[in-house]
Length: 119
Length: 355
Image (cartoon, rainbow over all chains, first blue to last red; front, side, top):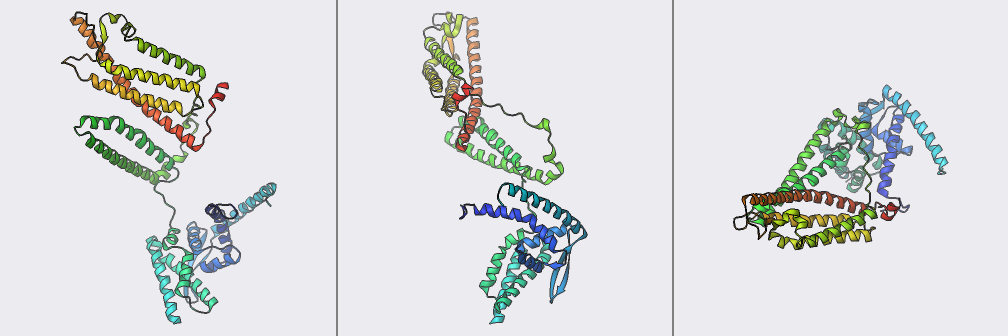
């Protein structure tokens, strides 16, 4: 089964998710240089054009926290308990490395696509 | 009304969160639900602020539907698990096929089945018992293999199976199957023709079969029954070689015809052995007897007994050899047909000969 562009929608969706996965980690870490709780983080990413549903964001935040890249704490705000996240010192270091890697990949990809005449 | 609608949407949220919590790991349940609940309630509040009224059931349901089914949402908090992982799975699949299809099924078809069916008084009943036993054995074996691999999967990280290889452990490349040359096939055809001439001449010139012993030995009456089928089998073999020479592009023909010949040969040999096992008038001389004009002596009787025993032994060895050949040829035929179905291009035999 194909869509109007002739692409298999399931295949495209699976490849799109694969492409987004690593980028989301980078975006989440970048946003958590300043402390935020889940809902505001999701909104700010959405406002920047990176929509992310709750079923993806919260497991990702937990994984990053387990890996030691984030720290979190429960606090009351507007009479409701909220969990606030921010980057840990280890997260800052790894984020720097990932950012360098991202820039390198981006530059290579730009060159490759230019050579292929796709941009 | 607004309070009642609000409480309804709140109740729907609570029921949704309760359903999610059922599938979550116990240790993290409360923490995850508190965070998810906060997010969902914030979404409801934002939507209500936008609409300037409480959400009704359908709107709340639409929001939850977008979030995903409770089991799907909960599954995202769990690490990905599999009974047998991608590293072990190809080995598991290989072992399963090897044991079930290449060991158990042939053993049942060639040994257990015939032994049970032929020794039973009720052949049909024994056949169904064999099928039932085969099914149970296949099921149990598959279960045991799966359990062993599942256990290996749990300890696989300690064994580092994926790192244990070097160049010496790599298998040799398989030899490319060589198509028989025209000269080879013509030689086979000529030999098949000579075989038929020999077979047709034997009844008139027993010397061709017994050599100097033809002076006192002659074929037993059993051969009167089996001579005809043997001649037919020889003509079939001649036809097979003829077709191979005339139609080399029929790549499916040689393995199919070879399997057919082997199975027919297997049946003839089996009937020969069965017939030879039954002594006639208390005497056991199934294959050769003394010539009618020869005076029997103790020494000649020993020679006849020895020749008969040797032929029976050769028949049994032939039956075993043909059984193994049938299994191998069936495998070759299946592989050939599978390759044809997958569209693997086969090399044109004419081109192969030029090369």
